[in-house]
Length: 398
Ligand SMILES: *Cc1c(COP(=O)(O)O)cnc(C)c1O
Image (cartoon, rainbow, N blue to C red; front, side, top):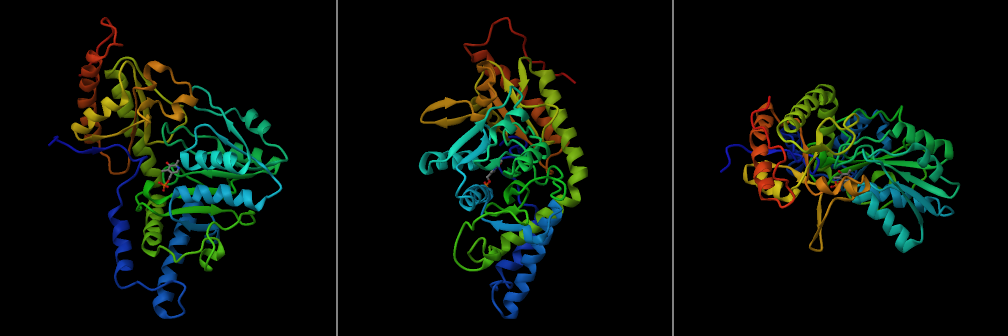
C-alpha cells in the first residue's frame, strides 16, 4: 500500500460531499412521493425539488424557472444544441471551438455529418485562446447557435464568455456555454453574463454522477429534449430524479457559500504544486493560459516521456491524475485539445493534468512534490529521446 492516497483528478469527477449525501438519504427512504402527485406525499417532495431549483438558481444568480434538471452534463449540452437548432429550422449553421468537451464537439459533428448542418470549429492559439475577431466573422445570418465552453476541462483555460456572448447578441445568434468545469469554481452571474444557455454537471461539484442542469434564459427559443409528461414545465419529460436533484441543490448551496475562500485556497495550492514541480523537474511546460485559468487545474508537459507511464507510476504511489491522451484504436494520440493548441510533439505526449478540490490539503501537495520528480527521472533515464547531457531533476528544490 502506498503511504498516502492523493486524488488530483477532480476535473474527471469529484467526491460526493458528506453534506450532499446526508441531504439525499431521506429521499431514498420516507420521502418517496412523486412530485407530480396531488397528495401530501407528492407535495412535500415537490417542495424539496423547488428548493433545490432555488439553490441552483442562487449559485447562478438566475431565476428558478430558468433551471432545468437533466440527467448529466452531456444531456445538458445535447439539449442546448439540438433544441436550439430544432427551434430555428430556417438556420443551417452552427459554430463551436476545436477544444470543446466531446459532449459538445461530437454532437455538433453528428449534426453536420447526419443532418447536413454547416459546422465551423474555431481554432485556438498555442495558449488555447480564441481570436474574438474570428468568432465575430464566423457568425452569419444563417447561424443558429454559438457554443463555446467557459473553462476547458483539460487545461483549465478560460474563454472570455462575457465578450463572446456580447458578440453573439449583437449578431442575433443564440449563445450556449458548457460551464461544467467553471460551476462551483468561479462566479457565474447570469444577470450580468450575456449567455442564453449554460450547462452544469453535478459530479464535477461534489454532487453525484447522473444529474445535471441546463440553464435556459427566459425567452430563449428551444425545443424539449424528451417528450412525455409535463415535468420541468414540459421541457424534459420523465419523473424527476428527486434524490439527486436535492443533492445537487445542496452541492450548489455549499459551492456558493464556499466559493470565494475555496477559490483562493485552491489557487494557492495549485500554484505551489505547479511551481514546485517546475522548480524540481527541468524541461517541463505549462499547457494552456497560465494567466487565465481555473484555480484548481494545472496541465504540465514533461519532455521526453509518455503521460501514460507517468500516470501508472503515480497511481502505484497512490496519486490519481490524468493525461491529455486518449487511446484510440491502439495508437496513442495527444488529446484533441493539445493538438488544437499545437503543443510541440516533444511534450504533448508527456502531458499530465492535475485537478484539485476542496478536499486536497498541503500534505497532498508535499507528497506529490516528493514523489513525482523521481518518477520523471526514472522514466527519462529509460527514454531513447532523453539526451544524456540534459539537466536532471532536483529532488530538494524549495
Ligand atoms: C465532465 C464534463 C462534461 C460531461 O458531464 P457528464 O455529467 O459527465 O455527462 C461536459 N463538459 C465538460 C467540460 C466536462 O468536464
